[in-house]
Length: 564
Image (cartoon, rainbow, N blue to C red; front, side):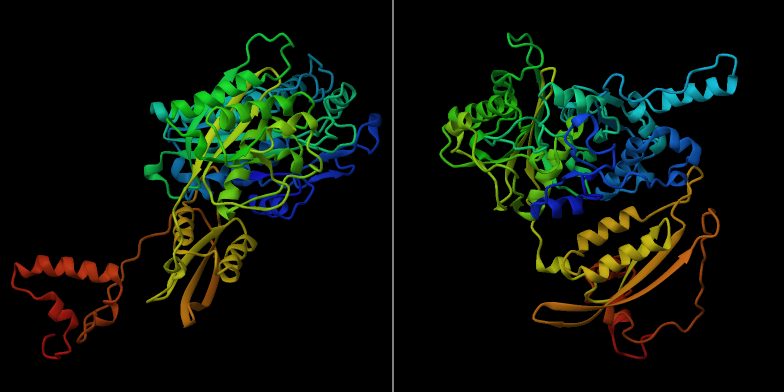
């Protein structure tokens, strides 16, 4: 997983802000002047969106400027989510990897180019490239182009359910064997005020700018921004597993008496029921539900009714069902809200705690009939990870529902023994010296997080080969970790670091070193035998050579000086 969220440049920052109860909906003039059109100035804004390393992605600066920050961050998040899965993005080149991108195309709000002059060929070519490159229709294709991915490249626009609908399509293609990997992403940023103004005037958006989901004071949703991704693959070949997708389905409301844009509880309930029945899942095993939860007068009651009927009333639930509402923390990120919600659930899994919802002080009167067994999480909620549901519904009636369960792998004390018998070398590469130092400092300053699994993932992703289409990872560092002492299971390590820079992109030659004779001594392998990998290999070789009358273990382990 990876992403950019309001006040959060990384998923780690996002997690910290969630658990600290930070209101990530802020009041500032970073998009347009405060007080414009008498709109609320509060919105969930991505703060850092102007730092793109064009050369790394094989682009010129002038080319990159045409794409805009949404695509820039989508490329960055795609790279990061592949790396977070413990895979080098270079190893995916040419693979059957699909890109499924949830996006909303609002008409007439991306600005207009300068007036075209038909007799000015250069200007016409420029306008043509700008119109194509800035089109969201090409976000998935551009991502596949940059990373050289050969699976489907699909943009999904079902309004607010876009990214969760995209995930359902990706899961289906994996099940059918059409793809080997899938990158599912959602992207939404608001740089132009027209749509926000219209939605506030018509009462969709909160005039106070407060996403009071489930609360009596709820008066509409608040705009939020997110560019985020998750990486899907079959479990058998996975290096890292946060969770398993049990079911992912889509449905549509069809014809409704209240009109196309009104959510429908009955259809959502039917989708939820079909989701757990298709996967042969006991609905009473659901331990957490992350809602769409917009804070609108129509949306919240319809959704809570569906959840209650599908997961509480029908199966006869007696235990409480915790209810999460991410939009109360960051606003409504619209097409990216589904993937953002999944990332929140994965954060809850990793920390065994559900972050609190915000702004719910008094439960809305018409919702109280569902609470309990539904339980609004307004404080940090200790949580034993289990099956979770994520819900999305779009303005046009497209619903998406996903069920996941955590990876139940448990950490052991041995996982922190990263350099037990002999020193360990960790190789690191980066775009600049600071990035290499950043990883080195993380390893040195976070001994509780640096496990054998972590270093294994790092090893996979740092196998970087120079690439003609990219400025690449030219800075290389190596870190030697040596155990110094251990007291009460607290291990002290010594760290030695060095950093160099690659002057050209050629693959470095293979060196064969011949050490000469006299490199043997009695019991020369004895000190290495406590290392299981080494001992197993010596045993294997010993068995082979026994057929020829050679006692390898005697040669390598005996103190007898005459044997050599």
